[in-house]
Amino acid sequence: MRPDDANIAGNVHGGTVLKMIEEAGAIISTRHCNSGQGEPCVAALARVERTDFLSPMCIGEVANVSAEITYTSKHSVEVQVNVMSENILTGAKKVTNKATLWYVPLSLKNVNKVVEVPPIQYTHKEQEDEGRKRYEEQKLERLETKQRNGDVILPVINPEPHTVGYSQSSLIHLVGPSDCTLLGFVHGGVTMKLMDEVAGIVAARHCKTNIVTASVDAINFHEKIKKGSVITISGRMTFTSNKSMEIEVFVDADPFVDEPQERYRAVSAFFTYVSLSKEGKPLPVPQLLVSSQGWSWELTAFSWLSAIALLCCKHGSFQAACLLNTKYFPYLGFSCDALRASLSNKTSSLNYSVEKHRLEQASPSQAAGWVFVIPSG
Image 1: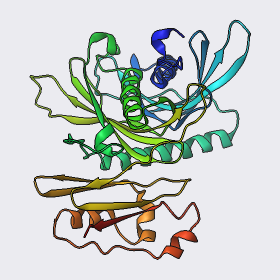
Image 2: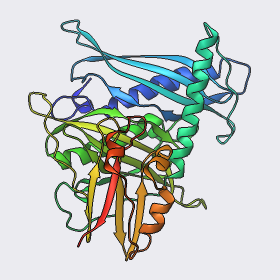
Image 3: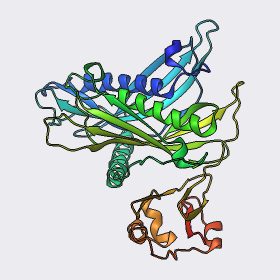
Image 4: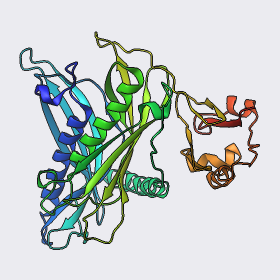
């Protein structure tokens, strides 16, 4: 690891690690998908499951990345990747990351064609059954994520410190040949590295300290990004606990000038960061202040599962995005569509409520947290 791989404190960027993980996954997936009798193809990243940064990596250490294919469906490949850092002076080794990635093979002749994946041999039937279960779960989660990809980040004039608008950031990048695969679309690792950079800026702006990536929730790649496209990577703070920050990041792509396709949402994810002192010790995180022109918010969240709702006001029209998991809506007594409908009218009265003891008695599997939206005055 070199100085340009790390931040000013010497900790390797989370995006650099994610890029190495994706490269390893792409190599082993592409190699496997071309091992059969099918047409030549290149594996494209579709999803990265939650990735925890177990231990920081520093300048001067050597990164050892290993990948293994653990499940194949007809059109996708699951890859498990482990990252280990080694201090070549002392010989000390430690595991820094474990990740699960999903790839789909795209034909070299037709980038829009997904080819079939050669099957792998499982050591026992349970291994295949468990892999199939993971496959079905990630497919469902990808669909749910794609359905709520209408959010946009709007500029805020003179934002207050520690609000969403104060730390939100965007980066615009022109996709060049060096960013792309043989088929002319962006490497997943390149996109993840840019996303981590934006998320890191948001975290640093919020707490004004050294920050490091702690984990990344599932990264979903909804659409391919072609060479020559202009991508906008946007990030905003969505939740803070005493020692961590959750940041939503998404990537929008503007295709070729001569193509009819309009801007589209290509990638979305949530990054978690922690604040560190000069000695590398965790620091308290300033709490996120959520407010918007005459409305006040009280956020109640649980340590095991955060919930956040963002209210945007522009031209007298309210938009709401509720990120609560849909399976908790019946328990909490409202639907996301109903909340959006009420907030679309500035004069609507919000009477959603839930008895306090219902939340206090709820188990982690039942309670996703509760957001109270209260008109001030």
